[in-house]
Length: 256
Image 1: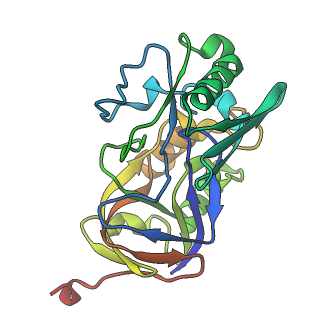
Image 2: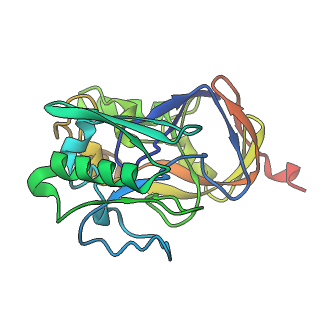
């Protein structure tokens, strides 16, 4: 099996950053993945005591399809976040400053309009990631699994709908489900797969048009008897992972 694409999403709900390679660290997800979020005005998120919260407390594709129209770019060394969207002036915000974070929050509040539940806040906290599950993990999907769903749905589905960190080829459809509880070698890293990824209404949103034009949840249930696509894995041993690297489940008798 082969790694075909590596993605991270610096701002929860916003566009992907495609990477050629990334260095994973034990106990962590991808660096800079879901590091930031826009907290809704009524969100209880407290940066002084960061805790995992459900996605509804933040601007997200599940509730706010229009955020798919935003093109975001984050440069970690300079801490600059660029945001642009149709009908709105582009913004470059310095996230190292309170003024820059406030500018980004005001921009998103204006963009969401009636969907904003009060003034949004730019949310960040050291060591915290705004992921869909509380555990720090890497998400993986086999391209064959997406293709099996496409065949049943009768339409093409951009893999970016499913916002995985790792897309891989060379496995049978849904083969990744068989890895639950097993270790895998991913490039130079070792991971343990621990959970299937249950899909939500975010997958309805076309990442190019920002329209809800598909029903992956419903199609998965109708044709496969579940609403799962992809898996989560924890990083046991860090290492460099690159596009083109191999992915291989570890045979149980080799685990020592």
